[in-house]
Each structure stands twice: as C-alpha cells, then as structure tokens.
Length: 327
Ligand code: PBG
Image (cartoon, rainbow, N blue to C red; front, side, top):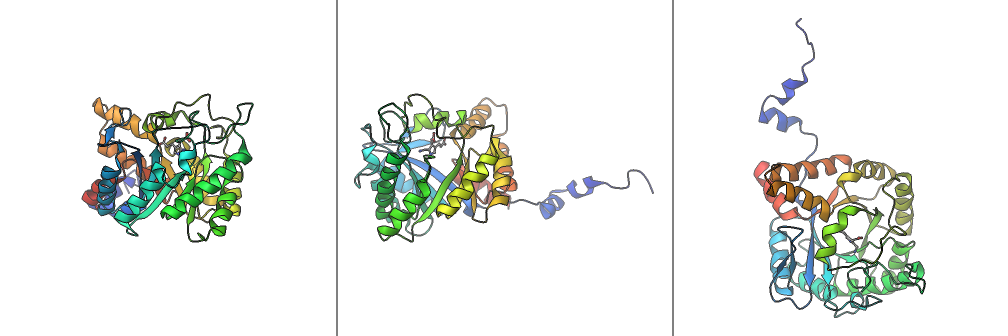
C-alpha cells in the first residue's frame, strides 16, 4: 500500500464527481428579492452605493416583480420610500402610503405565483430614521411603537401581503402584530420575524436606498454583535409569540448564529444578506479584485450550508440565472 492511504482528492477530480458529492445546493425557489419603491418616481433611480439595485417607480416595480417571479425565485420583500417623512412615520400606516399601494400593485401583478412580503417597520417613514416612535426624552418608545406596528400590519395584510416582516426589534412586536392580524380577520397572513437583528455597520447602503438620515444609532434596540445566546432567546420569544418563520440578519458575518438558530427552533429559518454584504462584493468585483459570480454563489452556498433555508438577497434574480446555468 502506498502512502497516503486516504486520498480525499479522488472526490474532487472532475466536475462530475464534485457535482455528485456536493452537500449543499441553493435553489432559486429559496431566494427572496428585496425591492425598493419610491413614491412619485416616474423612472427607476439607481442607488449609487448598491450598483445594480434601484428605487423603483410603481410601474417599474410591477414589471421587475413579474420578471423576478418568472426567473423562478420564491418571493419578494417590499420596502417603501415615501416623499414625506414625519415624526410618527404615518406613511407606513396610511392605506394609500407608498408601501401599501405597492403591495397591491405587486399582488395584482404576480398573485400567488410567489410569496409577497412587506417590511413592517417605521424607519423608512420617520423623519428621524428610527424604527419606532420617540419618547419625549428621545429614546424609542417600545410600547407606543407596538401600537403603530399593529396598525401597520393590518394595513399591509389588507393590501394583500402574504407575509409581513416585523423588523424593528421592539419587544413584543410579533405577538402584537399576530393578535392585531387575527382580530382583523387576517389569521392567514404569516409573520416572518426579523427575530435576530444585529446593530450592524453593514446596513450602510440601505440608508441611501430608503433615504434615511438616522439620528443617533440603533444600539438600544438592535443586538450587540458580540452576543450569540441572546439571539437564541430572541428566536424562542418570537416563536412563542407566533412567528411562522424566523430570520437572522445580517447573514455572512453571523453564520454561527444562523447555525445555532436552526438548532434551537423548528420553524423555517431565513437569513438576510444585507445591503453592505452586497455592496462589498460588487465594489471588489468592479475593481477586478474578485470574480463576482463565483463570489455571489459562494456566499449564498455558505449561508445555506450554515442552515438558512431561505435567503433574502439583492442577487436573487441574478443568482437564479447562475444556478440554472450550473445545474
Ligand atoms: C428595517 C430594515 C433595515 C433593513 C431591512 N429592514 C434597516 C435597519 O434595521 O437598520 C436593512 C436591509 C439592508 O441593509 O439590506 N426597516
């Protein structure tokens, strides 16, 4: 017997063998595309810090949503950008507010062919950029915000959203939205809870996407990146409050959290590959420093391998194309 006796390289020698033993595959149906729609736009407008991503007009959103569904992705997550923001974020609750109007538009376009989700949070709608209502001392008032989220959830369900995504990290947000939906006759509307959400520097480009000039930071409600056990508590609470799915956000810097959350609960686990994760790869690729398509698939595969069954990614449509070419 020659040395070495064990040769793992045998299973890497050809594309056919590698394909046969591949442990993790990403399917287009597991990908969800976040989309931005801005009130009053005639034409889509590029977001400079997210090359390839735009703020849609109502018209271009409908068209792009139809194309995304045609590409085979599993869902769309909608974000609205109002022209006027105010202290209380009233545009998020108004049935004629841009997000609620856009939900109706997209449902009219794609129906049940994909899952239509909406971000349930006030930061796109408030003049101060926080995810909730401010108390007189300037802190974010948890319980006052819950009442606003309940109304916002009803407005989104009434507009036809299949799933709402409470993302403001207020304590009790899932329970309050679940009760409000049930009381309003929307017991079939599901809740995708942004259960684990870290106070991350990687949200940077998103601020441009939704034109938010955040005053201060979000560290009194989003989680400290240093903590893992706290995330398990957050997901247990959200599942107890009625979350149908739980999400971890950001994704790539938190793969250990994704894996731990998957072990902790038995509801589907999603991960959100956020704006800064997208922009880092795009910026490096634009400089010729990395191979964009390979890097994109590598990140998605890693997030999937860590245990996320669903991935929200700005590359959803492009990745669906790459995956079709690959398999
Ligand atoms: C809250 C929300 C945010 C993102 C998704 N939902 C911003 C935040 O919490 O600070 C970030 C998404 C991204 O960066 O791509 N409405």
